[in-house]
Image 1 (cartoon, rainbow, N blue to C red):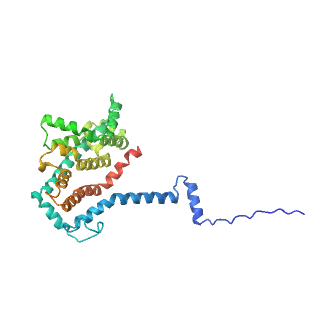
Image 2: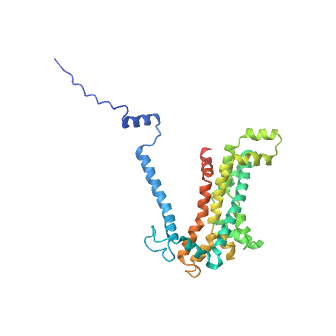
Image 3: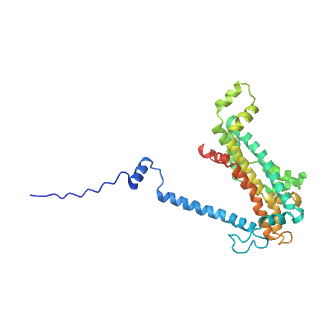
Length: 308
């Protein structure tokens, strides 16, 4: 009489156990990342945030310390508070030239961003909604221009402005800054996605002109992308250093970026190093305010190309 050995059956996994729930989620969504992948992404993002925010935190701590203590230990923590005294001392240097630099930067960046956003919106809308000969070639040239660093045009622009007498003129900073190939690209993608052709045709049947269709229908529908273009233009012009340095020799017309670097190069003869740090911190505040106040718009605009 023979007997056959039977293998023991594994114990059933409870349906409500975490392991069974994880297996069920993976079966329902095969592309769902694993727990290890999620924690790896979180770790990388955390390190990136610390890497980018640590210098800003040091600048904040140095700015609020009393004068002369900006570079004392602890560098990343409080060592007294005299921020308003530092700001007052900063504004008293050279009869308040720092405030003039800030106003110059706001004017250059604001005017350039507004005009550049409007031109980008018009060009992108035309490329997306009009059919004309050479449209693909024009769009290809714009894409190629995105890859060319603007710093390469600084010397030709200096020579050109020198020949037409525009040196020491705000137009020498504003005119090159109103052209944004990336802004045209983003406006074109967003116009093709968010402005339906049916709406344009209906407006034409009702007798609306092309300009009225663009400003009354196209611009409101493209608002998230336009805010994104405006912010990119504003930040780019605000941080621009080389072009204003070459075309603006008058100190009172320079933006804050050029002015602070000039102070730093004077070896403390024009302004103490601690007050230059305070000025750098104040120069960042308008950018932070712009991003925080318009973040609900530019988040949607940044996803336009991905959705398309």
